[in-house]
Length: 116
Image (cartoon, rainbow, N blue to C red; front, side, top):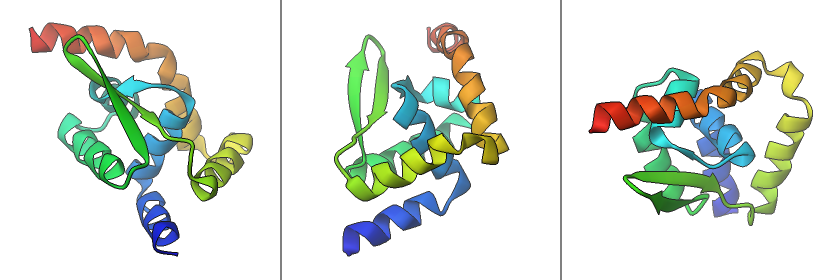
């Protein structure tokens, strides 16, 4: 029950939900998530730290960047995510985010320039 409460608390915040839905679709780094959602990087980093602390995401270092992906071990979380993804047209902001994934390389290039 405790894990279920944590999941619902995480998903109750719009920005956290957006991050979770994006990571369910694709592995992304902080700068890509920030660019896709138009949210400041520190906020995205805080959200990812919280998701990592609750064991919902995993990270992998590639060069200077850390890429995050959603763990698919939690049946409740995956059921909720799958339901949302199957009905994505009902969530205009999540649709916009999904379309923004196409620009992920642009955001990564911008981050490389800014981090150099």
